[in-house]
Length: 104
Image 1 (tube, helix red, strand yellow):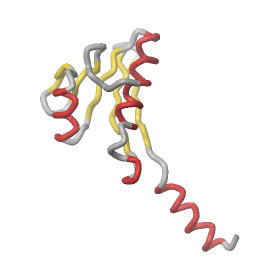
Image 2 (cartoon, helix red, strand yellow; image 1 turned 90 degrees about the vertical axis):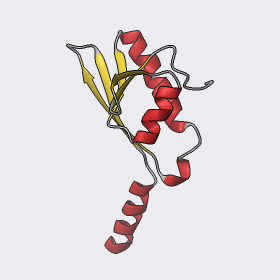
Image 3 (cartoon, one colour; image 1 turned 120 degrees about the vertical axis):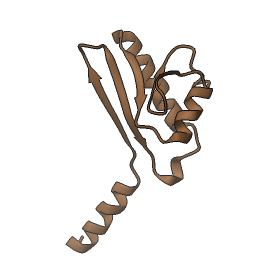
Image 4 (spheres, one colour; image 1 turned 60 degrees about the vertical axis):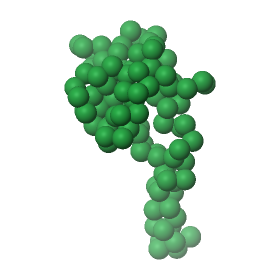
């Protein structure tokens, strides 16, 4: 490949991947999930909820809490409707075993 073609390929490759940002705090035994970024074509398929559920299961084995933070308002509202516990209004919620993340 030419370097120009390689550069275009790398940009397209980057566009097709998502990002999940986790910040574990050992002293507090809390994992903060600050971002789930998915490409447009992968949204509205339950992938984000599946990721949250999978991380919830792992943190459960380690004895940590899972907090979601820095959410857009619509996602925050959905998490509250699903039973997440409000920690800081419109900014931070805790995912618990009572939070309805879906059937996986």
